[in-house]
Length: 178
Image (cartoon, rainbow, N blue to C red; front, side, top):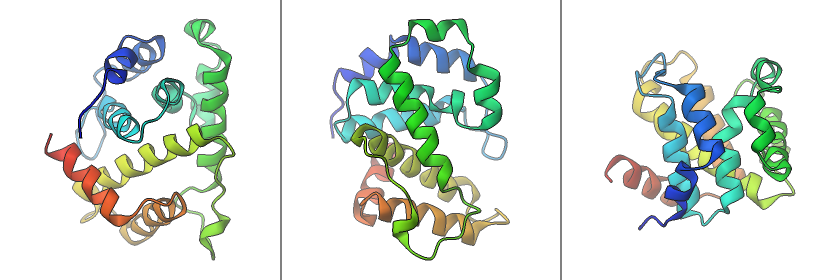
């Protein structure tokens, strides 16, 4: 799959600059992978999914506001004044939907996982869950104390988002063998 010019456009955006600065050279504790890799791979998935520029910009920002602590710490960043309100809306809707089903919540039916009314938010969820599952399988599956629960959690999300195992495996292959 080829990448388009959207990725280059995103990398020159305020939103990408904010996350690049926010993450700096920080690495994931367990894997040692740069945190910005989550954004890079998620943006690539969004490109393959033909997501809008706004969805891609919002994806860049989602870690800045994902947790309650991050929201509290970052809601008054001066750089946010340069970001369009509809992008902030996508980030907040992403936060709302993603935080409703976290890995410690046990569900009885896949339909208990709420999706957004906004297609762009659901595309962001696709990118996030594919990228997170890939990293989980690469770096944590054999050693994480909650492997069984996390494995089911990622599969539940992808099932709810209507992402086949074949598509997931294809994207993982493309991400790990560019």
